[in-house]
Each structure stands twice: as C-alpha cells, then as structure tokens.
Image 1 (cartoon, rainbow, N blue to C red):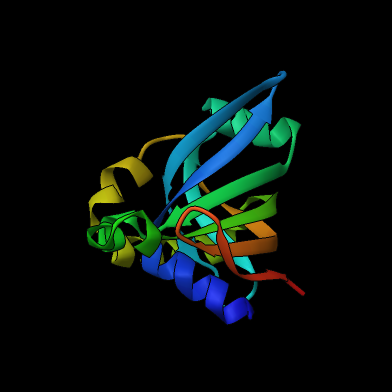
Image 2 (cartoon, rainbow, N blue to C red; image 1 turned 135 degrees about the vertical axis):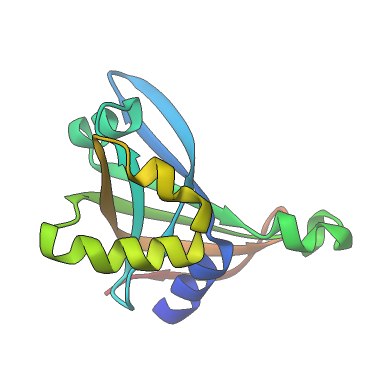
Length: 146
C-alpha cells in the first residue's frame, strides 16, 4: 500500500503543506519528489520562511495532493485527493543533497534559480498515514506507513 501513496505523490509533483506555529496555521504550495520507497517526501524551502520556522517549532504536518489538474473534466467526482500526515525530519544531510537535488530538478527543471538561493535547503517529511479519496467524500484506501 505504501507504493500506491508514493506513486500518487510522484505523479502529482506538487502538494499543499500545512504547518502551524505561534498558534497560527499556514498552507504552502510546494514542489515535491517522493523519497526512494521509504515513506518520505522531499521538498525545498528557505530557512528564513514562516513554514520552515513553523516546522522547527511544531514538526507535525499535513499534506494534500490531488488530481484536479488532470481529472477535472469528469467533474468533482473524478478528482482523486490524498491527505497525508507526517513529521518534519529536518534538512537532508549533506551527503544526500546532490541525489535529492538531481531528482528534484529532473521533476521540476524550472526550480534551479530558487534552489541556488542562499538559505534554501531540502528537507524531508516522514509520512505516518494517508487517506485516498475519490470525489468529495468516497474513501478509496487508508493506510499507515510502516
């Protein structure tokens, strides 16, 4: 079942990252790549950003990826959405950054200038659980990551 979730994230390429800090929620649209079959998703952010500060303060996050850009022609019932919960795992260690960067730029070639900014780091979210829905309310599958 983990493969289904990871494939969904890989196909989506973008997700909404929900964080909270100082008593306030924040949603951010993020480019992402799935970690290599390990129940992780990788993203990049500026360390001076509010979302990054929120994750340092409160590591629990929620993610939303969907197919509305591909499946809307069928109406709302054709859209699939995956909601995930996870934990901010901190920046990607130095020895792994180049492999993550290469995969990230392969999926998101227009992100090079952003990634080259001072203070931008790759980080990981360790995924805990997910729900896959079709349409507004039909739960297709639900699972936890091992």
